Each structure stands twice: as C-alpha cells, then as structure tokens.
Length: 129
Length: 129
DNA sequence: ACTAACCTTTACGTTAACGAGAAGGTTAAG
DNA sequence: CTTAACCTTCTCGTTAACGTAAAGGTTAGT
Image (cartoon, rainbow over all chains, first blue to last red; front, side):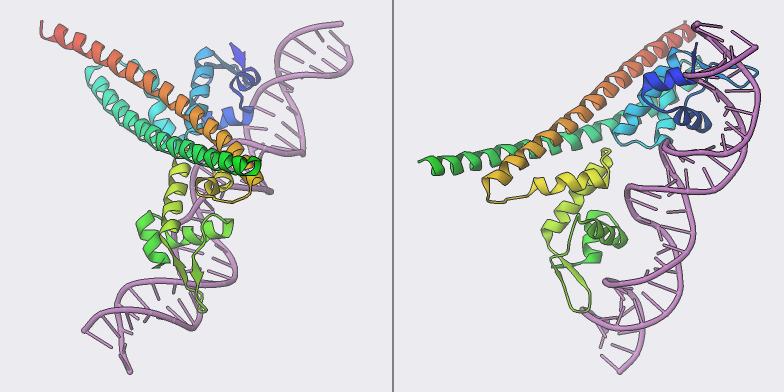
C-alpha cells in the first residue's frame, strides 16, 4: 500500500492530479483511512501510467474514462462481455487511425529530411568543386 | 483563391479557428483585400489539414507551430538547412515515440479482446452443454 | 516529544483553444 | 437594386486539466 505521494512520484504526476482523476472516476485508492489518507495498490499505479500514455497520444480524460476500465475489467456476465468487446474494438479502431496519421506524418518528415540532405550535399559539392 | 468560409469547410474547421491560427502565426491568407477579406490558396488548405492531424495525435498548437513550417520550408542557405534537418529529426523522434505508445496500447487491447472472446466461448459451450 | 515531511479539504487562479454574439460592411445571384 | 449569404473586428464566455496557496491534521524518525 502506497500513499498518494509515492504513487504520484512513480507515475510522474502530482498529487493534485491523482485527486482530480479520482474525482473524475478514473483512479481510486484501494482504501481511505479514517483520517482521510488515501492508500493505493500497484494496479492504481498501472492505471495512472496508462492514463498518462493515452493522454499523451491525444485522448481526453473523458474519452479515457470510457475505455480505461476495458483494459482490466473482468465481469462475469456474458452480456457484459459482448459489450466490452464491442467497445474495445471501437477503441482499437480509434488507436489504429491515430497510428495511420502518425505513420503518414513520419513518411512525410523522412522524405523532407532526405530531400533537404540531398540539396545540402549538392550545395557542398558546388562549394568544394 | 478561396475565401475563409471555403477553406474552413474544406478543412473541417470554423472561420474562427482559421483566424485564431492566423493570430498564432500558423496559417496566413495569401492576400488580404483592402476591405479586410482574407483570400487563401491550396497550400493554406493543406497546412490547415496537417495542423488538425497533428493536433489530433496530441500535439499542442504551440508544438505544431515549431514544426509545421518544416514540412514545406525551402530556404536556400546551407546553415538554415542543417538546422532544419535537426528539428525534423527531433520531430521524427517525437512522432516515433507516440507511435510506440499507440502500438503498445494496440497490443494490449487486442490481447484483452481475444482473452475476453475466449472466456465468452467457454461460457457459451457451458450453456449449450 | 519534537519536527520535517508527509497528508487533508477548500477554493480561487491559469492556460489553451476556441464558441458565440453584436454591430456592421461586401458580394453575387436574380 | 435588393437581399441572402457572405465577410469584418471586438469582446466576453467556456471547458479541460490541472496549479497554487491557505489552514490545518498525521506520521515517522531521532
């Protein structure tokens, strides 16, 4: 069991952020002692890191809230599972489209790099020859 | 030459957004007539679309401002080119790290999907005898 | 038992990226 | 030459995702 500061440090966020996430229903402490202290387990740390990653690639906390549970959830009812798979597939498509955009950007950047380098070598050979 | 509304429509943004981008130095009209009307060319449309894409994968307008010019820039001086290549490579690394995150997320999602589907088929076979 | 380093809630502040009107000028088709 | 559909600047409002005290309680090491 870790106190909030420990989790914050490990995950690279502030304690304020963790309380904010809790308020949004994203990550909750495993236990809250009578004095109000929050105690977290490793899973909370894992979730927090995932949130950060998804946020970093352009998802809002609101979107993340819709999917973060799907990474772990283990409900027992068949019906629930069918829904879960549906949501996961939607999420997967979203991820894939982002990957496509980034790969396209990557190609363009690489092309621009080699194009520029080519021009540079021409300039240099002119200078030297 | 297109008026602002036309560009906005094509790029899927509002006119307000285009003026805001102009204010940040991201996209500028090709010409502004004496009455203040903005007229854009195809390149502005292209840039605007790129901005949207980069934004969609998690870059802020501030970060985009630093790199958007690199996708097009054709300055003549050798020194300028060397700098440009440097910036492009940094940008490329940034893009690559985002791709890695997304690919990792993708794997996890796929794993969770097949895991869930496996459990589902077990549930069904139980149900059916 | 002291004290530094934690933790709590409450609440106001901030930045980014626009949205939404007001008040008025311009253009293009009929 | 009218009028709908554009365009302009200006300004105030909004949402997300926290930051930053303030005022005080808790814990852990010495």
